[in-house]
Image (cartoon, rainbow, N blue to C red; front, side):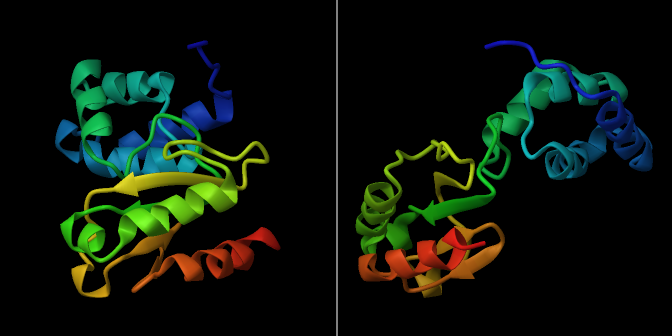
Length: 160
């Protein structure tokens, strides 16, 4: 993968984020959340800066980023769609909901639309099992979703 050059102003903002958490390695997850808000994702270059600022190994930062499904190392769409595929959601039809999103958006899980509007991911659990199956669009939670609801969810964001 080609190396990206971080813009100087965003690089300085990233260093300020680290500083706001006293450059403590124990604040890594908080720093990564803020960094992802700033950049939209966490490419290797961002992880390297965070590691240097928090005086922690890059391998540790990468391990945290790759372990937690909230973090992404690839750019997400303006409207990231996450489908819960945990046990309760799966048993209640999440796979059919996922298939309908894939069909209507012409995307596979992990992909972003060419226009950058939508990205599609699967999650293991969002902790809203009583609403299964659950879909997140950004931070908005949609519960008890059936395949026939998918078109309306997409339409809600297509015109924004």
